[in-house]
Length: 265
Image 1 (cartoon, rainbow, N blue to C red):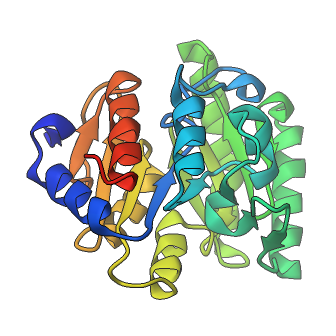
Image 2 (cartoon, rainbow, N blue to C red):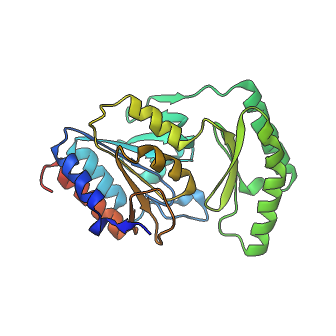
C-alpha cells in the first residue's frame, strides 16, 4: 500500500520544487479521477469542488493543466464545465484539443481504420450496440452498471469478438475499469507522457493523477522524473508514489498546488 499524500515525503519534496519553479505541469485523468464513474457516461460530472479548483489553478497562472483521457477529446469540455477549457489529450493521448480551439490528431492508417470499422460491425451483430463507444483510434465496450449475469454475457461476447482482431493493423486489446477496447498500440498514456517529457525543460515539475490500469503506464514513465498519484477510494497495488482518496484529499491536493504556484505553501 502506498502512503497517503498527508504523510508522504515525495509529496512534500515535489511541492517544494513546484513552489520554486516558474511553471509546473499538472496532468489528470478524467473518469475515476476528476469525476466519479457514472453508468451514463454522458453525465459523468466532476466531484464537487474539482472544476472550481482547476479553474482557480488556471487563473493563478504558472501551470500547464492537461486532462489525459481515454475518451474522445471533444467529450471533455462539456463535462468539465471550465471556460476556457484546459488542454485535453483524448483517446489516450493520440488527439489533442488546446484551450484556443486548435485540434491535432495522429494519422490512423487505412488498415487500422478498416479493422476498427469491422470490429464495430461485429460487436453490433453480437447485440452489443448500446455498450459500444467508437473513438479516433479505438472501439470500446462498456459494462458498467450491469448486473453480474449481464456483465458476464457482454464481457464474453466482447472478448470473443475483439480478441481475434489483435493480429491486425498493430492493434491491441486493453481492459479498463468496467470495459475493454480494441485500440492502436500507439494509443497509450505512457507513450504520450514519454514524448511530452522529451519536449519540456527537464527541471519542470510534472505531476500525473490517475485511477485506472491504463494510467499505470504513465506512472511508470514519470516515476523518477515527477510525482505520480493514484486517485481512488480504496488503495490497490500501483506504480504511483502516493495515494489520494477522492474527493476530499484530491481537493486538498489542488489547493496545495494553487498555493505553491502563488509561492505561499
